[in-house]
Image (cartoon, rainbow, N blue to C red):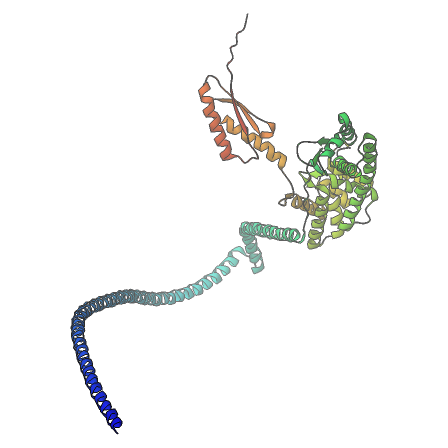
Amino acid sequence: MVTIVLFVFAVIIGLGVGSVIGLKATTKKQEEAELTLLNAEQEATTVRGQAEREAKLFMKEANREVKALRKEALLEAKEEARKYREDVAAEFKTERQELKEIESRLTQREGNLDRKDEKLTRKEELLDQKEQALDGQSKQIDARQERVATLEAEGRAELERIASLTPEQAKAQILEETEVKLTSEIAARVREAEWEIKERSNKVAKDILSQAMQRMAGEFVSDQTNAIVHLPDDNMKGRIIGREGRNIRTFESLTGIDVLIDDTPEVVVLSGFDPIRREIARMTMEALIKDGRIHPARIEELVEKNRVEMDQRIREYGENAAFEIGAPNLHPDLMKMMGRLQFRTSYGQNVLRHSIEVAKLSGIIASELGENPTLARRAGFLHDLGKAIDREVEGSHVEIGTELARKYKEHPVVINTIASHHGDVEPTSTIAVIVAAADALSAARPGARSESLENYIQRLRDLEDIATEFDGVKSSFALQAGREIRIMVNPQKLKDDQMTVLAHKIREKIEANLEYPGNIKVTVIRETRAIEYAK
């Protein structure tokens, strides 16, 4: 029991001590909490004051920005309003200007209409006056016609009474007098009719010629004096020349063609005026290059072989041309002669192609005029027959061709055409005139003929004329195919220091007035001579 009491007492004492201790702890915690709360309140008061100050500053800054934005927006609104007013004013001004222009045009048009109305009114008044005048004149004319008829009847009766002529005799006399009076008028009418016929015939002739030229597609072949043979390599040049030049000498002596070997790579030039010999030389050179055996004996063998082959080719050229123009029954000898024209040129124009073209043009024109086109083609084809052998026989190609046509018994129209196509004799048929016209057409067509020699000579003359135009120039000479001009000056008129200036001026004038390949060397020469005669 004592133990229990002691235990209870101990528990009560423990609880009391615990309560006191707990109370002190609680009091201490309350004090700490109050102190913490007080500190928090102070901090909150401090933060609140700072926040209020920052809020006031922010509000002031915001108010300033709002005022600035409001002011800026007001300015922009005022600027937009001003621009709008200006745009509206400009638009109104433009519309007012357009309205003024429209009003001005309408006023002007109204004035024009008023003037036109006045003119029409005046014209109507004039027409009324003229109509009245014409009515009066018509009445007067009717009265005069009646009076004239009366006078003619009276005059006729008086004439019959005085002249004692019957009406038939008087009519014959009047007709005779009228014929005399109308003679000049008839002559004028005849001249007018002749002029009209001439104009019409010229027009018809031009139409026929133009149609013939349009229907005829001609070939233009221009042969030069050189032929180029390409080599496989430059070593072949030495083999062509041969030891001490024996191969090239043999080649030139057998063909009659010059062989030009220069620095041009892999090229040999064959030069000669005879196209047949030049073609034989080209064939021989190509055969030698292909064969590879180049020596005098082989050259001689190939030249002879190619001469025979060339003879056959000439015959084939003639036969093909004869079949092309529709004359297959031509004499074989004439065909061969015409084939030679494949290697004959006139002002650079291939004569065989020219003959074929003349034949076709003649056939077309003859068909248009109702003549025999076959005979016209034959005559046109043979018109330059004499050119095939004019280098071997004396006489012009017209005379030679006429004799050959007679020899092979050609048609008389063909013979006369050959004789008359250059005006040596009078043409006796329409076909002869047709062939002459076709010959002129073929020769005159653009590109058919080359005037290179004439142009070359004219260029040299122009070069010399330019130099002699300057004061103090005695004479001038174009040398080296126009690549150099030498000017001799008068030493009494020009000094040494003036020669350079003269050469410069001549060079400038040549560059400004002439067209030429390469360069032209200008050489001015001043020579002083002292001459005395011993007596």
